[in-house]
Image (cartoon, rainbow, N blue to C red):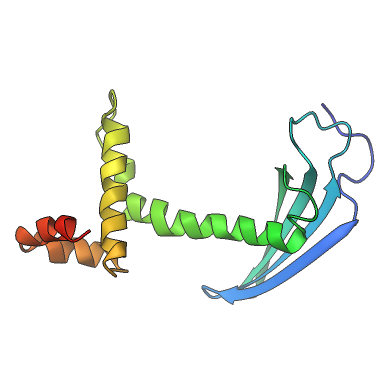
Length: 159
């Protein structure tokens, strides 16, 4: 369905977060409204607009993301929605980035049957075991464990 004319989201409820990191300054502004009648999404309670303004080396870029959630305004005020979105990137950086870069998963030749799912599960298990044992740099810990065939076995036995 198409939205009615006029602004998609009003400034009924707002939240803002500022942050510094990775050589950039980010401002996140969230506008939240109750789900309008024209949104036909089962269970939807709120609609939000997240606006990210990133400044890096004096250059500014703006990204706008729209969210639909079943969480009500009491459970998920704007600040909480912004934190949820930001925590999604923490998961992306901690797991998927490691799988993509350290295990070079994007160039994997495993493509048929259940093999891709099983291989991904084994990679996730290896990452989890290493993190449980206090290893933060997964690539370095993989090299460390590869030098002695007893280390991976001991890692599994002490888990």
